[in-house]
Image 1: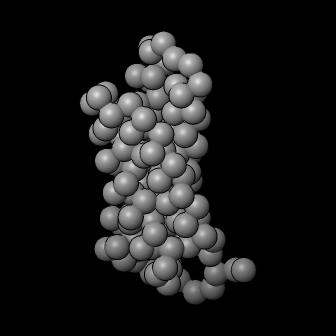
Image 2: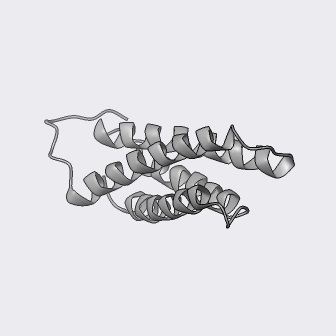
Length: 121
């Protein structure tokens, strides 16, 4: 799987997905920082794991799209799954405004990544 020829400009859809991934990465890191100051049990640990997974997946997904990796579509599909899981985990604390903002960012990113996973890159 090698790329040949000159790099083409990133499509508007891809740029928007990269932006959503980076925004979600930032939001997950901020939420993870907020979580570290909370008391928690098993639910808290599940949320933190989901935040870490989502943070890494969104960053990697954006990186792969920016360099036009031939694996981008598959990465976008995995990223959407990680974002869905993170949104669900965050919504286990629906009264926490930071968790709600993070879940919203994750849902937006998941939607865009699913769209990119089905698009030719």
